[in-house]
Amino acid sequence: MASRGGNRGRSQPVDNTISYVQCDGLTAMKMVKHCHEESLNNMEVAQGALLGLVVDDRLEITNCFPFPKSDETIDEEEYQLNMMRRLRRVNVDHFHVGWYQSADVGNFLSVTLLESQYHYQTNIEESVVVIYDTQKSARGFLTLKAYRLTPQAIAMYKERDFTPEALRNLKVGYENLFIEIPIVITNSALCNIMMTELTEMVPEEEGTHFLDLGTASVLENHLRCMMDRVDELNHEATKFNKYQQAAIRQEQEKHRMLAKHAQENAARVAKGEQAIPEEEVNKLFRPIPVPTRLNPMIVSGQINTYAQHISQFCSQSLAKLYMTQALQNAKDNKQ
Image (cartoon, rainbow, N blue to C red; front, side, top):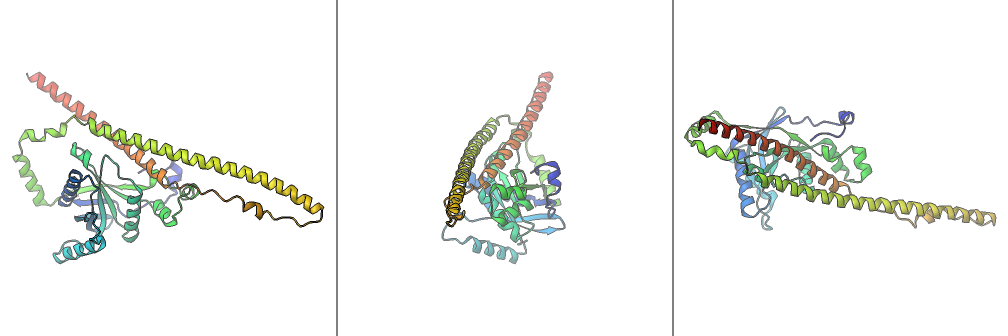
């Protein structure tokens, strides 16, 4: 995601740990299969661990396994350790390099995801989170993206201070919570040969669904989700405006009481009595707690993600439309 401001972004620390992610084709298919199975069965979010290794500035993902479903009888940490031990026995890469999660029409940004990635990235510096969008991919738009927390976001979670002043000092906004890492899917030479042979065996009419124009439902879901997030952001803005109004009223009342207190002290000094300290007045006005700005920032990030997906989706749909129109014209000319 883009950083906030032109000149300001140059002074911010940049995450250069990983340049791109190289994912094995079989691993990508395992992630896709798991995410689609969970979305069809119980509509729950599918999550799993990514295994691989780091080579220079390249993160190679060579294997993965799903996390167990929410069950009180299963210890998730023990389950992951047992899986990695067994993979090590069969000489499979067992180093933990991140995790993956399914998403529905781009709805993946949340407090839980931020906290999970923070713990991963502080324990394993090169770790990433891979997001797979099931609904968009089912319509012919493969959506497999990798993200990492920016250094500013990591500093924000270390401080655990989500007030407007703290976020302003750290220069953290919804634009620079995550940085997207390019993904490259690779296969071995034998896999490429096999896929080439399978391509020749697939009938020509089997690939026509990639030109399916019935994608209005995906765009409609994107717009509905964006409307919901805009309403939520408006609610958060109203809450923050009420806090500001209450803080201003309290400050005005405090100044009025201090002025009255100063007059009373002047009268007491004139009578030769001891002045009352200002701390007595300050005790009457407790500071109003500042509402956290983490949730509004996440909602703003979701709106930004939806806007980017809608823009990309519309451009791809228009390309499909023009391509289909050209094919239809060519067909008509032949007839």
